[in-house]
Length: 379
Image 1 (tube, helix red, strand yellow):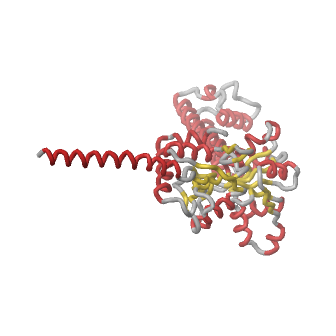
Image 2: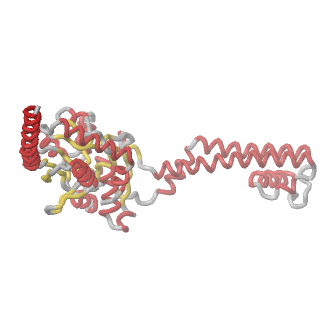
């Protein structure tokens, strides 16, 4: 019995010694694991940027939060464009690529992406058209079928009410309605019903009061429809046009477009051009440009008529990079109605467990609402 107890004590002491030896070795191995190589696109604000040895932007902040949550060590390396970063990931030169990287079929064919952390579209930043704003809105209102029918209904309802009152209630006998002749008197009564002013002077009997009341109620309903449709027309005119509309796109490219180089914006424009006949392709002017200052310099100088890039990047260029006086001169004139998911790109050699951990962290931040607040914060 004593020998058995001694045997168990010996085994326990050996197991404890092994743990004491293995635990430090495990810690040393973890500490010795090389840091992740994280590629960051330069000059791609608000998503990512590099200034000297410092990296920043919304996507970089998101990565830093995920890395801290998982206790990962990492080091940043720069990439000139999103396309260059995709190539680095496909070659295994980086473990993770960080920026607003659109997950499109051409990229998904060669690399893997995290779960998306945002959706974005493409947009044109152009010089505000000189004049023509009021005439453009007025022209849209004239062509609007609902506005046309509302005006017609308003005239007909008031005319019908005036006719009923004229025939059944003594031809507008009130002194304030009477004019020199019957035609003038009828016309004045009709205008009063149309405008809704002084209608109490036309209701000398109970029947006349009922007619005026019904006409006034219908008039209010029709005017409400007219006002609502007018507001919708004004909103539509202030919204960016559809960038995929072929005539608008042709006009933009004839005026010249500085496109964010090495991005999906450049790929999308080139794909559009391939479907055009040769004369239209020859008339198009597309200038790939990198960097905030390069894009804005092309626009300010008049060398091109528009800048084409991710919608978030266009908003950053206009609202942050331009001065308040310039912001009044440049507006978002067109945008794609469709949107594309954006996420991090995984390097060829990144372990599947870490890929899954990144996607899970993004999904958790998105579900909790923290991701939305981070993306809304202007860097």
